[in-house]
Image (cartoon, rainbow, N blue to C red):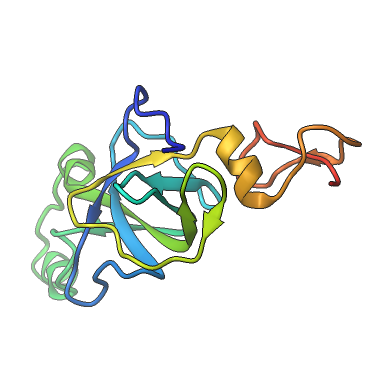
Length: 156
């Protein structure tokens, strides 16, 4: 609803055994070309409205370094580490999101459903973000919203 679907998604919702998507939080694999940072608001569009959340953490995963013994073996046996290019191609960024609600086109409803694994995640439209944050488009300019440099903060 509020996401600009003409834009590329910033990622895809994932489901891991220790962190499945819920109505309160979810994770998504960040697209390689996405410019995402902690504090950004994102949306997962759905039939009942867009699930809106705030990125609170971005973590890096590497299947190569998932076993601590790999590094020890390299040091003990004097083995050469893979090249930086090989290692960076295996790295995956995962963003963790706290759900703030469901935007139904008019306002924010309490969160009630989780996003489905495989759903695309988009940066939220700045006009929708104003509504979600309860910010007025007019009034005295106080500054820019942390996490979204396009949203002006003004008192209501």
